[in-house]
Length: 274
Image (cartoon, rainbow, N blue to C red):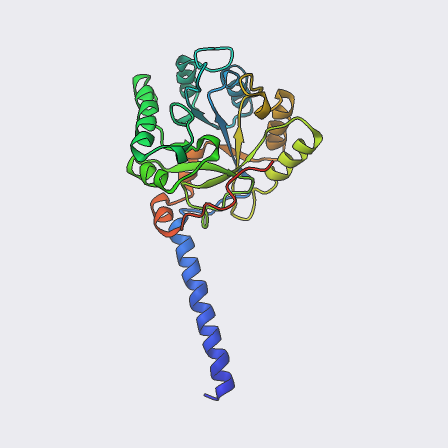
């Protein structure tokens, strides 16, 4: 074989091998292809409006959702601000996912592994007492991540963990314990445009995950989502044939064990904007 042809042949072989390796890795990670228009709705902090407003509205539209529960200090007992555990139990009975946000909403980076396990155990125990399945997904309080948390979550059998990042989730490149999400916080036209633009990113194998606090959020008004805007978002999802699921449902598409083994954790760009 002449030298110029040998050179190009070598490049072609190398490129083919890289492509095949990439396809094989993707196939091992994915159980099946992610459809366009796949959206995950997650709700943080056990806000009272999750029971009184959000859950009935989700049922009206036929949507799934994940409720990340914590006993937010210091006034979790104030039921004008937070759900009761009986209301949380009712959310489970309605078919929604009940998941963990730690007991005290302490940032993971501020906790030793033993404390992380203790905080998770508390929510797991409360769920067991009320006939709610052991949580299999987790949300980082304040989007605060730490490598030790990945070890703790794996040891306790969790499937997914949600962070921030303001970008879509790519299950072939994002570690399942570092799933990025968008926030729906805000009531201005700019906030609405940001959320609507995020919804439209659910395509090309990418999944859009939303972090939603109270609708409205009485305890923390700086992260509130106005009810009228929230329903407008749901109506858009319904009218445009989006599939809206809980975080746990992503295991239908993803081989979580393979993803944990093959995808390197990347902590960059996991803080929501704005």
